Length: 193
Image 1 (cartoon, rainbow, N blue to C red):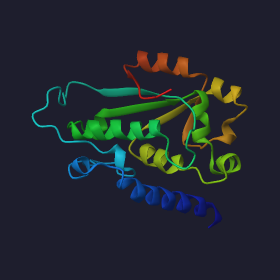
Image 2: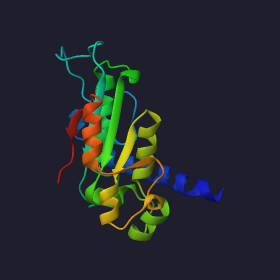
Image 3: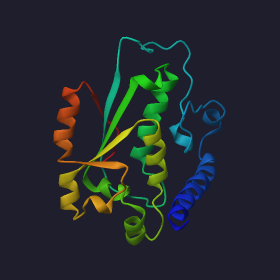
């Protein structure tokens, strides 16, 4: 039972933050925004577009390598770049792409390694549960693969036991992006820093 308490606490925290954040959405967005699959945060929804171009092409594979870096500026909420991973997924579903045609690899590096700390290490550093873990879990459930730069981990004096097991350790972000490019993934930078 003890190992389920942090997960339940995270889910409660995320749902509480979601209800508070709902008020931040302007009314003209709130009445139109939709959540095709993922709905754990108000800002991962998509707006309908009438008669769009560049819609789903069944001849294409939608393989996306998303670059996630930066720092943890607000330890109480899901990091904005993780929200962008979810929004990218929702946007493709809204565009008619079947889930089996969407392959997303999210590559974490730099100071953002702090956002993927396991519960124990996050609480030790920020004195609260890690709000990112429930989001990563939801993304993992729809097939998103997370990778972390082993170089960044070393620079921040972290090892694999410091982070969530939902994220896979890579040699580096650079080698991961090069490998993903060779496998046909399109690079997408959603980071702010």
